[in-house]
Length: 305
Ligand code: FAD
Ligand code: NAP
Image (tube, rainbow, N blue to C red; front, side, top):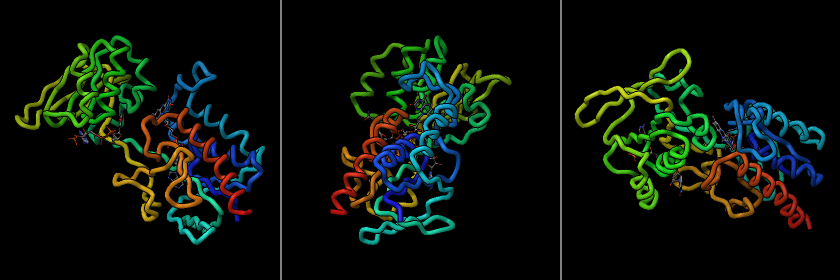
């Protein structure tokens, strides 16, 4: 029986584990893949305080190192389901049933893919899903942003501080983004739009993206445009399928919490990208993790009095 089982060893889960373990709790960290989560997908992180630049895997390693020292038990496995049985939470993986007084859900989110030719080939070579992370690498270039939601339009505005021009391609003739964000984009001289259109193919040489083939969905006409980078924002999917029966997610699957990272279920916390929140970054993930790690301790104090 653990005091807490943390599911997902990205920055949020590792930080929650560190804080809980330093409170002298019996902590297990369950991960189905590589420690570090999405950080493992990026070569350069330039917005994590304390490091001018650090590779994702190196930062993951640095976050992982102290966990052993404080006695965190590392478990390899995939969460399938959680059963809430009074004060005992049953964490069911593909291979075993674990028990804990609390659980911290830190399974992250996944960027939805466009699914067009060239997207995978040029991933991290001109194709990006994170303007905050990669925008500065595209100074003075012509960039394409795909999508019409808050993320696409906000990130397109963000990219104008680096780019020569930013074009937003959207599959309809009106944006989904909030009006105020739309107005800012329409007023920005560096931003232009290609309406009613979808990306057909991302093309390039052996090094990086050079151009994009775009199809107008109304006329079926296909045209080729030169772009140095393609930022894809067609939505994120939370990795919350395994807890969808707990009544803690919104209609899109994001887990709702209060400021203490508590969900609607007592003793069940959620941290990082899987939460309903505005800024999904490493810094905000570790902030969430610290709060939850401490709150697990407070919860156990109250419930073992
Ligand atoms: P994640 O990092 O997604 O970790 C979740 C973990 O949970 C994963 O290891 C996953 O394997 C595990 N998991 C999921 N489901 C299960 C399950 N059922 N059972 C067991 N384990 C499970 N942010 C920045 O601040 N700066 C950057 O420069 C930056 N660059 C990025 C570049 C790329 C290419 C990407 C993809 C993201 C980048 N981000 C960056 C965003 C940042 O990586 C995320 O915001 C952050 O990793 C979220 O942390 P997390 O711990 O909430 O989730
Ligand atoms: P989103 O709101 O789901 O928008 C995704 C966009 O991508 C939509 O415009 C959608 O088109 C388009 N799209 C989806 N699949 C596509 C495909 N296969 N090909 C081309 N286009 C495709 O996702 P998001 O913008 O990432 O936002 C996610 C959530 O975070 C939302 O709730 C959002 O409000 C919130 N958020 C809020 C803020 C803020 O408040 N400042 C900032 C960022 C995000 P359609 O419009 O035609 O469906």
